Length: 375
Length: 222
Image 1 (cartoon, chains in turn purple, green):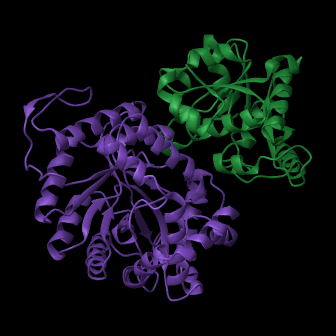
Image 2 (cartoon, helix red, strand yellow):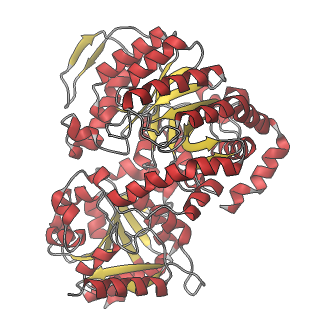
């Protein structure tokens, strides 16, 4: 059977050609400061984000993806509107979410908004569905945290039905039933790919496999090798459910500058600010330069010069067998101008260099003998 | 005696997420027979256990309760009241759970528990013997730090509980999992092991950990 052949072939080490790997940018639309260190308004932050995405398109980045939060320091509460604006100013870049907190959304509304985004962008819309690592949307929209698992399961089921087999007859616990319902606009075959975002929960990995959906790993700290067992679990689960091999992606934070030192100097104060707040609010350990440096050296910050960042991305793509890498560019309140500089370097220099490194068999050997054995 | 409660070196684990499967791997490596459950039927976690904790056995939570004398609770804290206390009667319950408002929601009693959340867990499981432990290292650090007894620089793990026999059994478990065991005193003293406390998330040696805990104890005294 074709699907079986495909599975075994794609399980080989490099499952996708380097030119087909998707390199994206992810944004929380965070409140940032201006060059003099003053906080700028949320409306300006949103307009700046549009400019960042327009630049991303111009420098050859494959996708631009917006998160979903309801917090005072993040302006990403209505991703589809920002994405539609970007769609009108770009021609090529894919436009998505990272992630859509499906648990507290109506899947019918998610479908209508993103199928419409797909239409206005001429087929460039994509989604990552997730449960979200923060739960502020539950009280905000009147959902009960005790239904965390059930809500997500039910809403993912309905969304997939809307995407895969309209008209839909469906009933569930958390919304009114649908009977032979068509929801417009219709999507052309294969449009609006949905990925499942996973922060490390094994049950979420199984769920992605059960739906035969591609897997997006959110790796926000620590050595990425700890996600290797989840990749194995995903492959085994796909095989168990009789699904063909799917793509695996990863989202991590980072920043690119001309030199390693310049990148660290730009990012450190803002990284420290984020973790100082987390320490005060949640009893986390306070940030130190040593911890920051450990995240850069062996953890999940893709930060430094073009060569440093490209080498690390190529390494992690090989380590986990990835076919998508999303850079959550600049952590915290990093100014717009420095984000634009990161985007320019990522698109024009880092991505081509990663593709080059992935084509080089000597690099593959060095990677196998070097970094990955050290962690 | 404590070693009889570890008889057959069996360990039960409720929770098959990141933490539960990491503890299961350590226990299998430490020579334990491990039974582990998620929510619902055992079949739901069979593949997870097979891949992430090979050698452990997927069970239902009721079966886990019957399986071993020592049972680790490794589920999101706000869900412990979904477990039926009577099935854990007489058991040693290792409370490896922490309160995180972004996972557990704003829960006043858990957020402000003056003597720590384990005291509330003990109130719920009134016929079990609760020991707070295995909660103060993240699952990845836990995994990475396991070392054989006597290795220089071995990381320590503390246990706090009112039933001293139960604490002794958990200290033995900690050693088998790959950490130097430290007795942190009463269940209420386990407050020092929670997020925001002096030892949370850091990974200290036995000497450092007992120094930090005795300093904390001295500060807490009126």
